Image (cartoon, rainbow, N blue to C red):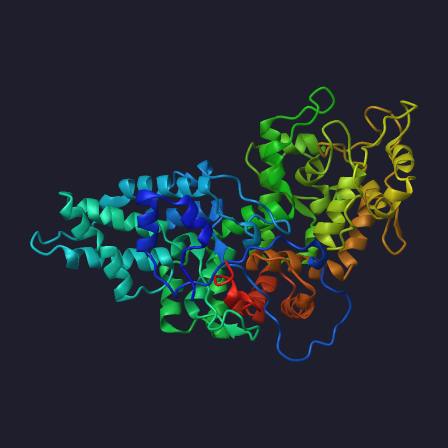
Length: 562
């Protein structure tokens, strides 16, 4: 038997918060969430062409708590609230590069207190809009049922049973017993809806939680997976209608809904939450270069952020192959950013699409100041960070973690010593060389860009000439950043790696070796369609990894063992 409320919750909930939470659910509705830490050893799928015969393993997805962005977007679409209450919540942990990884989205006492406070404020602010009928003083239950049925269905992202509504309606006679009004009872019931695991978690059920046999998601579970993947929010009425009709799982309807959702403004969440984390551009918020060496201000920070967002958005909605992200001959700049890059001014403070045919050094992601800046140190460039970014984010070939007590780059004995000479001394340590020989030669290809992404031919402090030549793993040499990006774009690992990041984000779990066949299938099918980002997304959402789930051996005994 499974309890709806994970045991840890019962230790932290008291009084009204506990009563409200428990009112929204009963036994036998949810499986226990078994939270496991991410396993770095399983984060890389096998390379090559595995013999992918037979059914696919969709993998295990932990009961998935809404992260802060998802909570804010959900209450926006559910209640029309734009106050972003989750700003007061504790910061979400990250797993496999994303803050929507279910295995690390735990729930502690502080967050539960924040949920309770947010629910009270949200209900108080939205009650008048939700009060769509006038109760009969002699029998207010029919009006209450009408409101709660619709509200709980939308909040829990699935149809609700009469018994569930009855439990919520129990707050009305409870309020009357204490001399309180219909409104008070209804507000308590609505708070119970918002404190239920059915709201705070994306619930997917297994007929047999201990079975590893895959089974398809039901249409409402699939609708939630789609909406939180593409919108970081709840399904809208059109998606719920398809789920209600039982047609969402069909390939034709699934593709129709995905295309509709990508064209919706809410797909901007995919730009902010997927691209912002995949490309590291969220880190711009905490970027503070040395002001004496590299002048930097908030207007430049925002222009860099918008450049990457607008380029990614064009790839998401346009007709460009995804691999062309590495070699796009256009970008978006305003006067401030153009001046920083040394490009012709567009004559406006608004971000404007410009052609880069005459400036090939700026083409693609590797020429964008946002990425170049967040992979640098405040006072100098970092071939290590930049090389690691390429390996992890573009090729999914991360080196092993560094040994303990690794020291930073030593100061130069000769102040005119260039970065390559200093890195050579640093990586001569046998404990470091194994990793640095992979990362550093890639990062050298971006040395023509200073720590804030401006073009240079000499290093600012040492005055040494920049040498942008380097080497990719496997012995592929390049003379500069242009050749580096050409080699990267031609690497078959690129599309597969983009797919792997989409899978990790879309499913909220890390990739494992069992996903190798899925990644090959999705990348191959997308390439046949044209290789666009939208093709990768369409192929992923039609894969068994996205439309199916399974249990985990031993999970049926979790509660009994405690």
